[in-house]
Image (cartoon, rainbow over all chains, first blue to last red; front, top):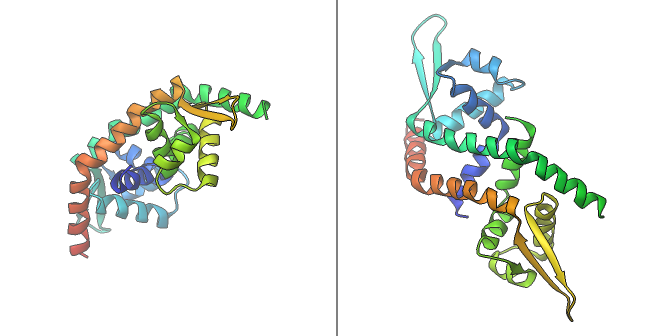
Length: 111
Length: 111
């Protein structure tokens, strides 16, 4: 597995990246909305996650002059191409987790 | 993202899990073959990775009485269902890594 694929998988398996991308899959969000819908995320972590996603070109950031200033985040076209992968992983896990847990129980019982 | 999906993504993004699954996608392998084809893996790490994959029901382990004893590893049917996901991630990364790197360069230049 090449460097880029590994890097991507690391990114995808980051809990906060996952939750943030999934929240943005429902449409553009203001920072304050994201902070609410990404349960348990700290302000520092959300800011860092959004910055990472923006830097990777997966999320766009739009600042609107207002008082207070308004910042909206959205998935970019590139970000959207990632979503089917996210759903596929989620679906595999939900379909097969029972088999994985049964295998673990059998393995542990045979120890 | 539920616990199982996160767990799975953690597993998938483990370098040695990745390389081991990909090596087994070419067919059943003896431990000694795997140790050669999973470049850079230590004996301890390969043993631990194979044990994790076996416990998750993704890899099977068959011991044949011989001198020395022969141990073959293979993907289970469940393990095979995971491979399309692995290829999809690999493909996304290879197709889009250029766009991600361009986005990073532009982001860093604008700092």
